[in-house]
Image 1 (tube, rainbow, N blue to C red):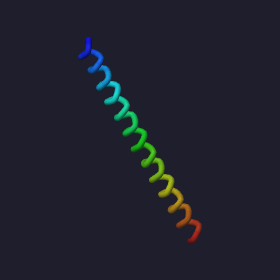
Image 2 (spheres, rainbow, N blue to C red; image 1 turned 120 degrees about the vertical axis):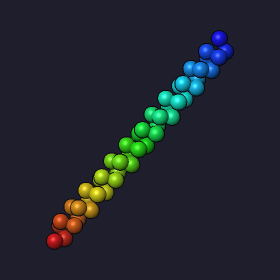
Image 3 (tube, rainbow, N blue to C red; image 1 turned 30 degrees about the horizontal axis):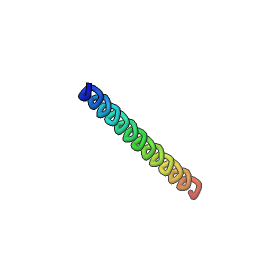
Length: 47
């Protein structure tokens, strides 16, 4: 029973870790494109 609980505990943290990692990457990806979009917009407005 102890190993069973330990297994689920590790699994839970593993899923949580990947979930946080996924959202972290997604956040930076959106941020990057947002900045890129503004740079292009700024560049087009200056011409």
